[in-house]
Length: 193
Image (cartoon, rainbow, N blue to C red; front, top):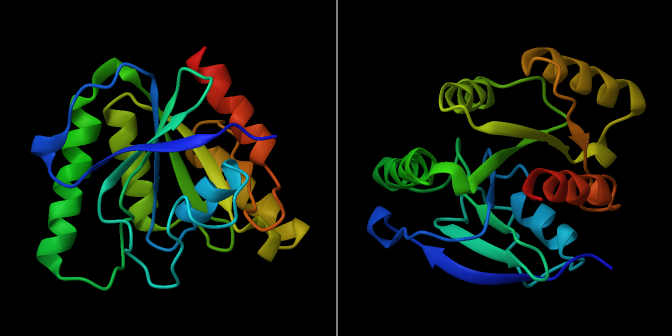
């Protein structure tokens, strides 16, 4: 049985950011990479915890999920890249994400970078990885939608990202089949205990 996640807080502006005692692991990725589906899969739920949409850019806030029974908080960040909204709205999300990552401090244990397994490394993902490296924030790479790739494609993506991230091996993940769920929880708990 997966751990229970509870939506603790939603933050829309930098002024609403406040200290949280628990170690935090942020979830970051391009719009439509499957962050909401991943959260629901981690919680053992298909729907209703995190809103899943076919329209990119539905997450417009920082959503803090407490992991019950564990000293951990997962933080869902707005997606980056394409989203059906104004440039000013995207700039507002970018500012919120930047403020969160740069000011959270040591309680931010890592950023889980969600990467679409079907795509070769994209510029926005590479830019985020470089920025996190400059901030000295650990990266947990996760290749989402792995069920939509064959074994050869999966292996190619793993090798590409492993090379780009200095040997860190991505976790293959599928919200549809549950592939990688236990491995991702194990990684989270290893990093926060």
